[in-house]
Length: 206
Image (tube, rainbow, N blue to C red; front, top):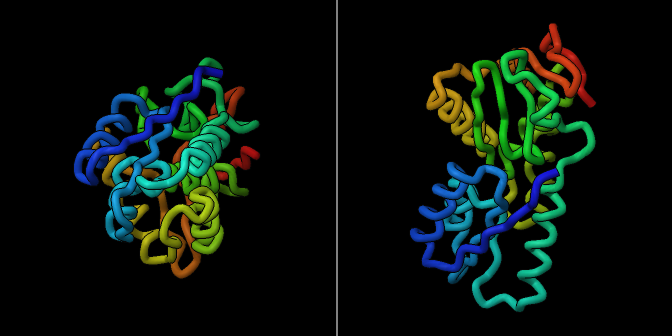
């Protein structure tokens, strides 16, 4: 396992958002905490949506800041079952790396994921038949933020999916995701395991 790191951004909101976006692009495995000057739900959402993993009030005690950082480090630790970069051929399917913060795929694709996107993709890829309900996905996204963000609901889940589709498109891919009407989503791409790619997208990885 590589060295885990967390960046704490203490600038004004726009500066922190720009820095978070840049860090997420060039150092996808780095955890990012934004110190918020004042409390605005819109500002918190913007910071989280553009790459931050968590936020903390700028005037918080060192104990609270340390708790946020260590909580994030625990989530960044690669979980059992996440594929190792050395063990997966990227041409054979989609897989999560670096604690789930990077999704790799055919042709060497590397797509950086925010905390919420990571929870969404992990839940979906590890689910039986690669299918998950709206409620399962919403609960997973809410749980990953540990109450540090406004609660996700179905409309915001749609925003998250739209953002993921744009990320895939920016890498030259159509996101292999099918909406199951009035129920949830299904990942339709080939999924790789730590040993070999799955020949069926419906394979359960967990």
